[in-house]
Amino acid sequence: MLAAFVREHWRAYAAAGAMLSCIALLTVWIPRQVGHVVDALVAGQLHGPGLLRQLGLLVAAGLVIYLLRAGWRLTLFKAAYQLGARLRTRLFARLALQGPAYFQAQRTGDLMALATNDIDTVEQAAGEAMLAGFDGTQTLVLVLAMMTVGIDWRLGLAALLPFPLMGLAFWWISQHLHQAAQDSLTRFGDLNQQVQESLAGVRTLRALGLVDRSRARFGELADRAAEASFRSQRWEAAYEPAVGMTLSAAFAIALAVGGWLVARREISIGQLTAFTMYLGQLIWPMFAAGWVLALLERGRAAWGRLAPVLDAPLTLADEGRAALPSPAPLQARGLTYGFPGARRPALEGVDFTLPPGRTLGIVGATGSGKSTLVRLLLRQAEPQAGGLALGGVALPELPLATLRAHIAWVPQEPFLFSATVAENIALARPQATPAEVEAAARLAAVHDDIARLPQGYATEVGERGVTLSGGQRQRVAIARALLSDAPLLVLDDALSAVDTGTETAILSHLRELRAARPDRSVIVIAHRLSAVMDADEILVLKQGHVVERGTHAELLALGGWYAAQWRYQQIEASLEAA
Image (cartoon, rainbow, N blue to C red):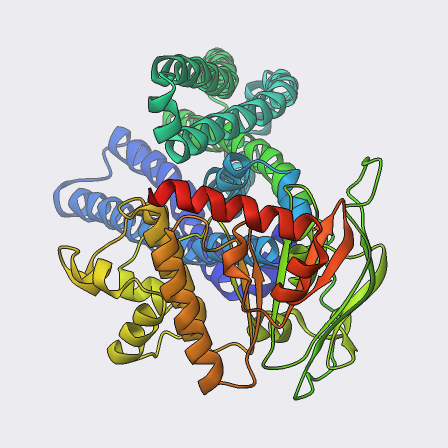
């Protein structure tokens, strides 16, 4: 992944590399120049203006190094941040294409951690680690060349004797650091998951008196995450003592051997001074090696978590290329679906036809297969037998974008975003005018409620619409679906949180809307039978089978489950009214 990114942004990496090469050359020039100045001073050959000129050159070299270091960082980090943005976009796009089956096997906290912490770690590996490794390696090669070739090869080889031991220490530390980094990222995902679940379910936690238990659990996970991070940092910190001990041993050897060579007049004091300065310059390459290894091990661990998500096969194929005909009646033929491990199918042999402009009601006891039918219609799952078609075109043959643009779905638990009421209603049609938004709200019988809010349609609803009641959220979602102008409206028990009076008003508005839009089809799934009494056809599901079918009057005359449930609900409504 990094190699492909570097090839794509080779200009930025080449420019940063060129600046680092200039830095390295100036860095190795300074000690050699200092050595010449020292020898000239010892020999009494450098005075006044000449000394100031030499000092000015050294200061100028330091200033150029400073500017070049700032330049390479700005050049490189711009490219590295592009990698982070690209990875986040790619991750989001991949997750957006996955079906519900994928997310049922994933934790939201882990996915959030991937999009934040893990990608940040990969970004660091692509930025700081790549160029710091290049800089450190280049500096190391030049410094060693100056030490061995430019000054004295015997002194250079002697000073390098402790370095193989440091290489072994680095290898040993890296193995442990990789495992510790993986554990740290996993613990951070666990902590993220706890935060997400606790905040999403804060009302339930308060209602059940579980806030203290949740706080204790969060503290436990926070301690584990902190411990894992500390363990990772502890292994990363082990690089520094290895470098320090190696360089200390190298300095001791260099001073001993160098002093002996100076005593024998085989090298000058200036050369020994330059050599010790070069040895001091090895501090950066050695520390860079430890730092780069730490960043790469962290990046490797993060990529090991991120790559499987980016490469995960889609749970729903989007390979359809067929055009949607008009008109497009909805047809189900032998529709069968079973959940993995279930003893019997959730749906079996379901048949129906919904012509344009007609209303289909679907009722049945809990667990009869109503919601499963909606999942198949939205292609959140694929049937094991039979299928659904629009205008004779099987749903898998249509692009997902075309299918979902054709359907406006209002679930029982609608999702509202942290935006204004108007923005939530106009979600599918951002270009809708305020008048169109208000008209949709009136059809959903929620306009009066919105008018009573502090800022009306400009009121922020909070995360997931927390400032609105359940009935208000449902009606805002219905208004959103009506404004979308999709040819097929699916109300999946979307009137369960409103009273019978509001339900009657909404259904009356839907009848008016159907009269104005004779080509718009409606599927109403409900537990309350009054919601489907005006449907052109009603299906009664029981254990995944259609056991009754007909209009409201026909089903009452049949005297089956529908008739019995209708009588029960009518008695219940009478008692509530009394």
